[in-house]
Image (tube, rainbow, N blue to C red; front, side, top):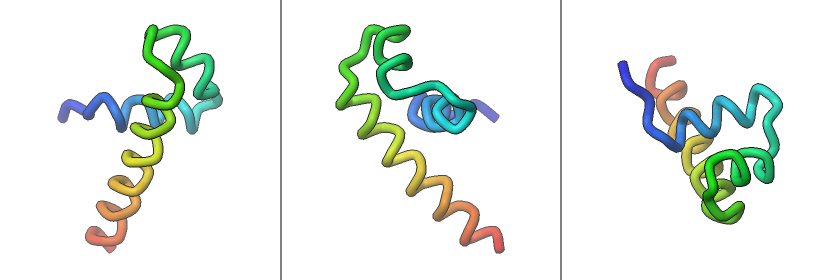
Length: 52
């Protein structure tokens, strides 16, 4: 299964990359990276709750 870009960012964030590092490496504004990480965190949590 292919992950969305937001979920990929979230997983990279959980693995230790900072929002700033992600923003610089992807040439995306940090506020957009943070927004996508936040949205992915809510999505992943909702998926976990449905699976339980």
